[in-house]
Length: 383
Image (cartoon, rainbow, N blue to C red; front, side):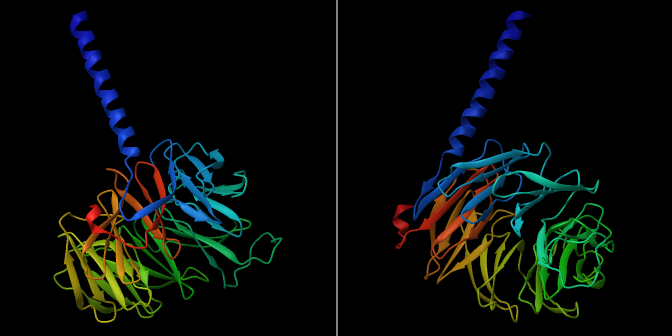
């Protein structure tokens, strides 16, 4: 019996060692093809939200609830452990770092020192990103403010509510309860309106001044926008339904403008800088270039490998299109030929943004954050 027990312990130890070693290899497996790594940060545990770059500093949150600030050389500036799972991307406005937790806490932190100076508790999970906007309404706060700032923060909770608070004092301006399911994703502020989706399937539009419902829309009882990211050009709203259809909805009226046909779209969408072109990635391995005005297909490119279901956003960069997939960043050149840019490892890319003319930030689910710069000439021969 003891002999078999010892063998079992040895096998389990070998398995654990193998898993740990494999993880360590994956974390360090950056391969740069047509890019130069500017900054690389490896968090001590998996990342739970996307990072933020602000004033040449990088802010990230890991699974342990530790909020970290790094300089451009990847040197730690400060770390603060909030001892709770953070559910939101770091957000900074008016020199205040704001985070939301699974317990419904809103934390206000000094982004220069990491010191927490204010918090409130809602007893409901913060289920969306927190976004800032300039409040233009006339709702009076119970307590006076010490500044002239009009910055408000907005977020959703798992009980279907959207909350609007003054950033400086964390006093409530308004709360909306029209949604009949958990609010998800990232709300969008545009033209003094708030757009968001809920697990009840509807796309919602609220008045940012008072939180009153302007319209809500979905095509049928079976259709749903839950889990879709929202894009807008200030006139229309773009979102992908659970049936993998792209919809264009009039922002003012909440009525259908157009919907895609025979497009097996994944939720990530992006617009070109002139708002005329929509970039769509699909379940059948296509990157589609679509007219944002008419919804007509301009061009599609078939890939060899499927896109990730999340984080596969395509970014316009001059005459090229960059996108994330399978743990790496790739680009379509002027001839729409695929070229590798950089690979972070096996873990899925969960965030990818352009931060300068030739500089980009990306992160993966394993806690790696990388800033890279594109090389002047891309050579597909390095594949």
